[in-house]
Image 1 (cartoon, rainbow, N blue to C red):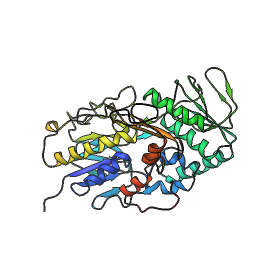
Image 2 (tube, one colour):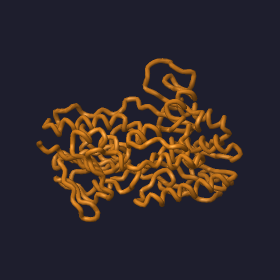
Image 3 (tube, helix red, strand yellow):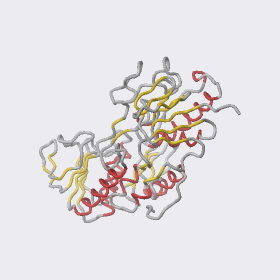
Image 4 (cartoon, helix red, strand yellow):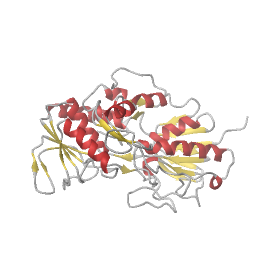
Length: 380
């Protein structure tokens, strides 16, 4: 029997896991990931007020692949024939997909290889949130908005203040979605301070005790300050390769087939948060990238020239699902026509947001993807 083409995937996140699973039976897949388990990021927000969810959203990798192999390690460098890991071990491959994702402040994501470090930090913050009388959240993107809603819904006696740099939450999306989310947050009793920032906080900042000083000089008498200022792409393994270019947002510039340096490494692809398409750094982006990467790699493994294959097309009108706790939320879906009573012409309100995401935050989907049985302690 002829050997199957080899595929090395660096990073076991939303792109790496999905593509590995899709191609496990048609290519010889090796997944390199330093952590022993997949951490489902959206559920980590709710787990701060629903601690039983933490276990459910921490999903071991051991059942992901039936034929391929998982190597617990970190890729140190790439070359035309594969990669060299940090311990010197070399992995040969015909094709390589780098999907190293992004970093975010604890407790939303972890860059630590020791997963217990992350889990212990998460549990410790959960205790601090439970005892705080006033919590300020800096940053009103999807993470900050969801976090404000989750805390307010679970702990109605806790005062929650959300600091938004723009006139509404989710400023990079439809303004009407932002207004709909403002309504939900106000219903939950969240104080939203708009057009203001916190000069002492920048992306990657850690949780601090209050008070919080705002850009207009106001002092917020919060007990606890939670930063939610966005993700930072992890591109270190690519930056030293010839021809690789990084844009102003820290993401890797690619050709039409998501390749960063096709002139010297035509079989190297990138995906997820590190790739500079018009896709946002959200799980939604992977719903488009994963099928494309899987189909393209499958065709390339069969001998098709990559530049003759259909190119990648990012979302023209990306969905956005933003629960503000288990029962409330607002969404934007790319469907035609005036379908709702809430927010936007393509906006959806509490019921559909709860059904699509708010009820279980996709925990069930990703447990199925990784072949893990359902366990008690899940949301919904």
